[in-house]
Amino acid sequence: MRNGVTIGQAAAFVGVTVKTVRHYHKLGLVAEPERDSSGYRRYGSGELLRLVQVRTLAAAGVPLAEVGPMLGAGVEQFGAALADVGRQLTWRIDELIARRDTLHRLADGDRALLPDRACAILDRMPGLGFSPDYVAAQREALVLARALVPEGFDGFLTRLEHGLDDPEHVDLIKRGREAENWEPDDPRIEELATAMAERYLANPALQGDRAGLRAWSRASAQYRLINNHRGDQAPVAARLTALTEAKLRAAGVPIPHR
Image (cartoon, rainbow, N blue to C red):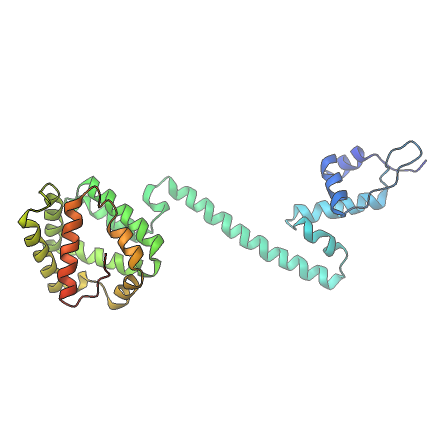
């Protein structure tokens, strides 16, 4: 009869389950001992040592597919493999920290999806007289803009900041909100679009810089999606935006087509 311990005892000594030991056998990481005369597999010191080595590497984050080659490698290769696993673990730790931070930001509403600069813009709007519904629509547009046109997002924020700093522009935006109660063919829509275009031309900062405009021009499909967001809920607003943009294009401002 061979000296040794049963698989249950071996698993308990090493700190894993019997199922785990059998999984190691299946993967070829630990040789399965022969059965003794009683029909039991007996684990000796060699098998226990191998089980400890595999469990330790697995617990350290080494993928099981890489454990076998590592245990069969020389000292130099083993060290290099450990260093590579260390780099992978560092990347995973950074990713987990980023996920945790996102979860924390979720409790703070907008900050899970938008940077602090964008949230500051949204925070200013109620104090300037914009309604909660308008702020909500702007929030959604910012989330879409950041996700769909990231290279043009900072420029978009700059335009919004300039717009909130311009009292005449703010007044025009509010008038645009009031216009949503007008009939779609109301002649005042054309007049308001003209006033908006003239304000954009009088204050070029509202148009954005050339780099930002180019980024949006290259993303015309994304621009349409963002610009038409909630358009079905506010057809007058959509028409007002289209008229204003047409006037700006006619004046040479490179605005993407809707």
